[in-house]
Amino acid sequence: MRIPMRAAGTVLVLLAIAATANCWFDPLDRQLKREEAMQIEAPTGYTFIPCGPATNRSLVEARFGSEGGSFGTNANQLIIPPGALQDGETRFKMLDPAKGDSRIHIVPSVDFAAEANLILDIRGCAIEDMSKLAVLVYSDEPESRAPQDLAITAFTDTTITIPIGHTSTYIIASN
Image (tube, rainbow, N blue to C red; front, side, top):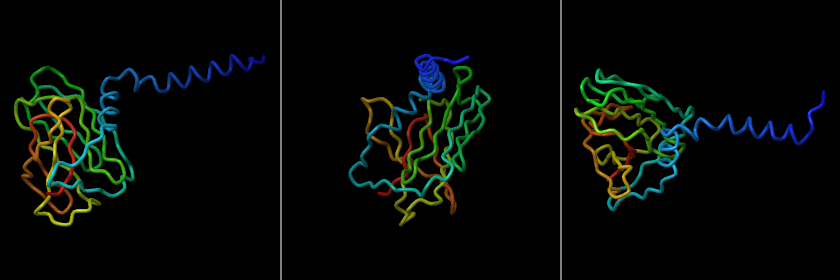
């Protein structure tokens, strides 16, 4: 039995639509795409630090409730303490930086009742002076786009830890 070319083309188009439908219908995927496409310029006095090629750029998903938990991509990790989430179960997604970028995206935007810790992998980042290292957080709310410089509470040769009060977009920078 032969399928007419027109019908075969329609089937291929429908298969392509079905393959990409998940990111069209998943609000977290749509938010990640918006966050990643966002044009962000370094504020006065700061320079974004490029990080080396992400060999295995990861997108991970996890669900947490009031008991908290942790999840991460490669060496980037979000640790949510018990009691920090008070609105039932929340589904999160985290996306590693692209090659030459240092933006970490975590969606959806959630305010924590208790501070969570974000551990960022700095291997491969072009850090010239650790004393000038900064992590900027950008709100996903357009009316409050001004970045905040977050306190780095711990660092090793390979990671930095910052306490966070909500999820958003985080960028490694120098000041």
